Amino acid sequence: MGSTPFRVAVIGAGASGIATGVQLRQAGVAFDIFERADDVGGTWRDNRYPGLACDVPSHLYRYSFAPNAEWSHEYAPAAEIHAYFRKVAGDLGVLDHVRLSNEMKTAEYVGDGLWRVVTSQGDQGLYNAVILATGILHQMVLPDIPGRDSFAGAAFHSARWDQSLDIAGKRVGVIGTGSTATQIVPAIVDQVASVSLFQRTPQWITPVPNNPFPEEKKQQFRADPQKMDQLYEHLNDIFNNRFASALVGANDEGLAEMARACRENLENNVHDPELRRRLTPDYQAGCKRLIVSDKFYPAIQKENAHLVDTPIAGIEPGGVRTKDGALHELDVIVYATGFDPFAFFRPAVITGRDGVTLNEQWKDSCQAYRSVAAPGFPNLFFIGGPNSPIGNFSYLRTAEVQIGYAMQLVRMLADGKCREIEPTREATDAFNAEVSEAIKHTVWATGGCTSWYFDRQGNVVSWPWTYARFEADLGAPRIDELKVA
Ligand code: N01
Image (cartoon, rainbow, N blue to C red; front, side, top):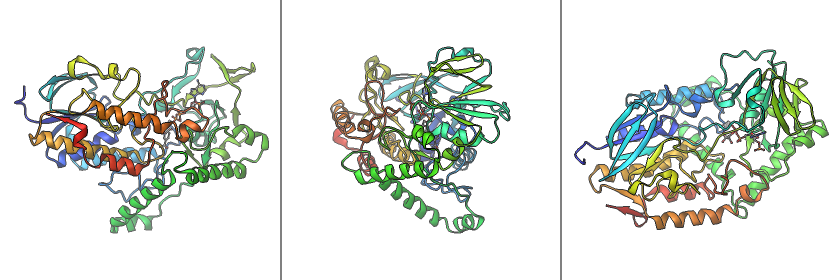
């Protein structure tokens, strides 16, 4: 079994899978990337709704190794970001390794440091390591609203926007008020007959303009790419300071500053006191993921925009009925109702030592070792695993830290220094006990809201400490916390 040439299976060709491929290629390690869809790009391939732009600055939301002088705006639109990932994958030789329309169904540890990977296209044979770059917010959640399937018009989740539909002149209902809905409403309000926003919970919003980069600026970046690296580090510092930590007590000033900015935005930009009251959250800013928009408040105050904050009773062929008995007649319903952040690699089945599956191990709680590995699953690494920092940071920077960690262990395996590496159960339990204690003191837990940051058991999906600690924790493997054979 052990005589096959060393090779690694990467699952997923989204942002983190592509970056993993770049690192494996540079290290001279053979690899295949299995991608379930027919194109690379992950979330930027799937999400194509009007108004979608990244709310992390474009010169920060990029790989550290691939600066891009061509970003059109301070916050890049989705199609540009998707094109960037495709280009990097092509330029750096990763595309040749991508096996499209190849969904991983099972990965089974067969012993001796080897995994058998089976995809929708059959048995792919044995790999010495598996890196799960399956992303975080990829499984859509459709709300369990009575009568949902009875609607006579067009209806879809925001991540499956119907590109063939002409929404001009239509009466559109948007359910949800997260980052997605607050981008959709301003983008469509001037085209549609009306937009009704069904709000269950108001959101705190910080206003940030999105200016285009003038041609001279792009010329400067092209002429001196170091300027982009300086900007990248500068933005990273700003983001690390602004969102230094969600820990109450450790970052009270930052949290108070965020609350002040959001409250001023609401007071200065929503003119009708009654509408302002209805848009005012009753929880602390920072409890839910902060929304970045200078377009949402102007849009919701337009004459053809309606904020509906009476709870939804059901959906009928003609539209959405609210609990006050009113029927909101609609031609289109958009479910901007979010994703399951605890889906991770699922629905695939991953079987580790002794026939134990990761689903069984995680049935009560998705517990990883420092977000990147799990005991009983040798040579298996997560990019974007449980407790990755995913708040308002750049996910790409987070992913690169995790890839850097995994690569150090993959090199040990590839160099024949060992056959199996996995975290000890003790180290994993100790880490998770620390997480459980820390989350009690985060604004996510104390701020008086519910959000997708927590699962039903109260486990947090994100990293509760500073980003600096994340980089320090994963900078180099702690050999005493690993079982190496
Ligand atoms: O989803 P969400 P999202 N009846 O889960 C409501 C990233 N992102 O797609 O708050 C009525 O935040 C729900 O209400 P409530 C970013 O990380 C990034 O908007 O639970 N309403 C909520 O308002 C973001 O955080 C960008 O009471 C129902 C909404 O649906 C993450 O993706 C852009 C309901 C869901 O909000 C997810 O954002 C877009 C029901 N039955 C997204 N069920 C960038 O710019 C749910 N809701 C990078």
